Figure: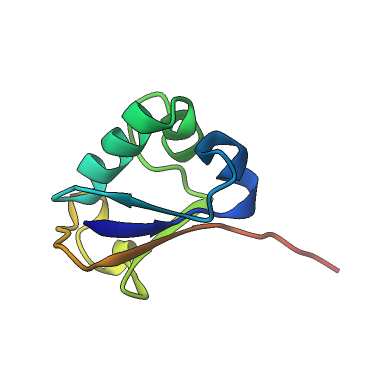
Length: 91
């Protein structure tokens, strides 16, 4: 199983769970598995073409998937995935 950390803004979709366990072989599989258990979450993570939204950062074992293989990044049992919405700021 993969442990997925859910950010606060998405927790209403996961029945307020901060972490959920899924079986998945890649980030794409994880998103689809999350969607089957928690309808509506995929739309928050992906755009209409199925690509991950730019403002959603995903880390596998604290490594940004943008520096791995993006949504094709492989997952294995015991991995920890963090979904982190980007925070914009200014002065």
